[in-house]
Image (tube, rainbow, N blue to C red; front, side, top):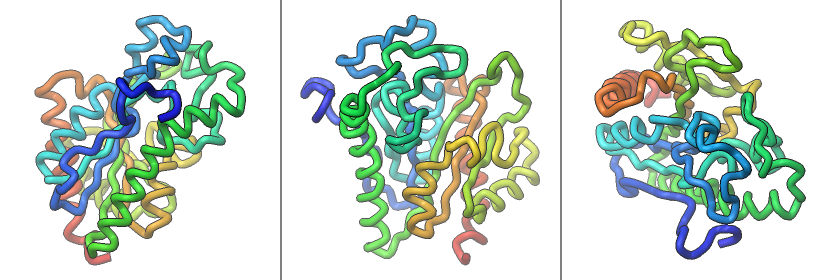
Length: 255
């Protein structure tokens, strides 16, 4: 489809499609893989392996959570630099010309046709797959709980970040409120509301399109990526986040 070759296959992966949990996990920035047509976008190997290209550790954590919760997981196979699936096509950040300190030459001055081709190849299939799953679950009387899983760099523009886990929300804070209460009781990680990003940064697109628009409980999770660098730390973090979700759902399900 579009810019992707037949060999590259589908841009979207759905794991545990028949998961029995109400939770549906989404990982928009799961991969640093670049579509063949785009090459390296003019970036160095260092840049293409860094946080600007993907969310290191996020998919690994989401997969452990998916197994623990028996939850369906949907993730994008290609780099956020080709198309950031947590942004609408009209947003500059969907195909960023600069990401943190890195100019992205292959994203400079893209034509409308080039932007549309990327959206049709990468974003719309991803958006539509989530939307179809949400519709199916609602029709079956299993309104899903939407949880997006991300990671963030511990140093941004040269400044260290003290927050370890961010619980993000847009206008609907029901699930976030409960998770933050549970995090306060556990005290395991420095867990804060709408940090290191918030709605004002345009990061709640997936929540708005699929969660708020359907009246679903929803939350975005951000984990500092130095805390999820290996199997052990990824397991610890996944257990923590799974615990927050499960502890929150008993009261949340009544609302």
